[in-house]
Structure formats: C-alpha cells, structure tokens
Amino acid sequence: VIAALDRFAAAAKSAPRPENFEDGERLCLFGEIKTLRIVRGGRAVRCEGGELLLPAGAGDTRETRERRLRRWLRGQGIAAVTAACDRLYPIYRDCGIAYPELRFRSMRRRWGSCMPLSGVLTFNTALAAVPPDCIDYVVAHEFTHFLRADHSPEFYRRLSEVVPDWAEKRKMLSNYAGILG
Image (cartoon, rainbow, N blue to C red; front, side, top):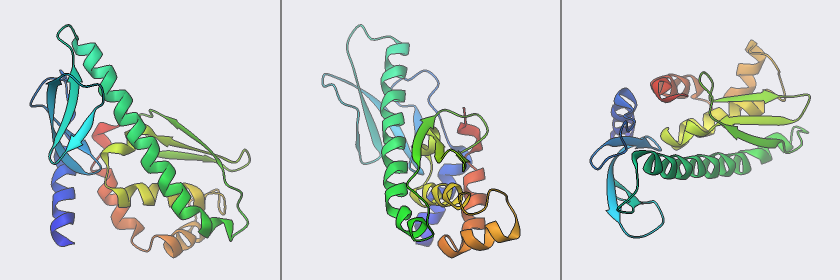
C-alpha cells in the first residue's frame, strides 16, 4: 500500500501531459505514468503495462493523434467516474437521494460540481489521470452536496462517513491541478 501511494505521489508531482503526441512522451493514466508509443496499424488505443499504444497511420498528423488520444482518455474518465458513481450511489440512495444525471466536460478549475436542485453531477474528464481512490473522493464529495449544498462542518462530517481520509485524498488530488483544462 505504501509503495502504491509513493508511486501515485511521484506521478502526481510531475503529472506529465503529452505536448506533441509523439512516441516516447509521457502522461498520467489513473495515477500512473505511462509512456506513449505510436504504433502502425490497429484502430484502438490500448494500455499494455507501462505503455499506452496509440495507433497512427502514415499520413496522421499531430492533431489526428491528439484527437484520437483525447477521445480515448475522455472515454476512460467517463467509464471510471460512472463506475465510481454506481459503486457509491447505494450509500446515498439510503439517504433518500435519487440517482443523478451525470454530465462530463473539460473544466479548468474543478474536478466536479453538483446542482442539487436539478439533480445533476458534472465531472471533469481529466479525472482519467488521477488515482482511482481520488475519483471515489470526488464522486463522494459531489454526492454529499445533495445532503448539504455547502462546505460546512456538517458537510465534512457526512463526507467523512463515506471517505474517512478525504483530506488526504484532497491533498493528493491537488497535486494533479496542473492537468486541468
């Protein structure tokens, strides 16, 4: 567990993002640093160990590679957040909360937001870069806003019931702020 936390901390500090979408660049995927490999042939982006394999044709441009990778990363983020919502929702259902509408978008300053009156949770697609337990923290944080729309001591008391180490997760997540937007 300590070794995993150390790996996640190291990844968070540098939180690399590809600039030119070329072979050998690095990026974060679920808290781990991956090396981007441009491969000929194939259609699907895939992860194999420490490498993220990005298919590219002979005539593909930087923009084509960027679009393909961003679309794949967005899908990974959506899938991970949706799974976390499904996993954590029963706790909130027992508090009388209806399953919210989930929305996803790129955000510059937030990992998520809650509109309690509308029943909508919006999540940043950049969450694909952070460790899974940080995704769980963001999801629990936003769900807790259905119980308390503020950041009062009562809000944090309720959040602590679901994520006892939320302060540690929030601190870890702050290390990834450079990848927002």
